[in-house]
Amino acid sequence: MENLIHYQHLIKQFMSQFAEIVNSQPSSGTKMVTIFDDQHQQYMLLNMGWSQNGHIHHTTLHVYLRDGKFWIEEDWTEKGFANYLLEQGVSRGEIVLAFQPPQLRPLTDFAVA
Image (cartoon, rainbow, N blue to C red; front, top):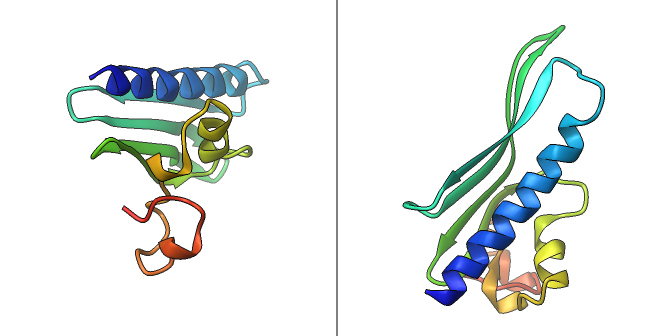
């Protein structure tokens, strides 16, 4: 349980800081929104709004806590959420690059599942 709370904190801290930085820039008609669902262990950063080309609803980062690991389902952050986790002392074995096909995950330095 202690790890779960710590993991939730790491996710929320990263996403909140990322959204704050993006939203402090001159407005382009979009806003970075955080979605935290502790009950289902799902966490998302969404870019939402309007541009000259139409409606924008883009997932920037989606992380799922499952089986004691970070499952990174989508990551379009510049630095990379996995790199942030490593800097925070999370081991590579606790991070799954879920956006990679299962057959390619063994080729990464991270957990396969």
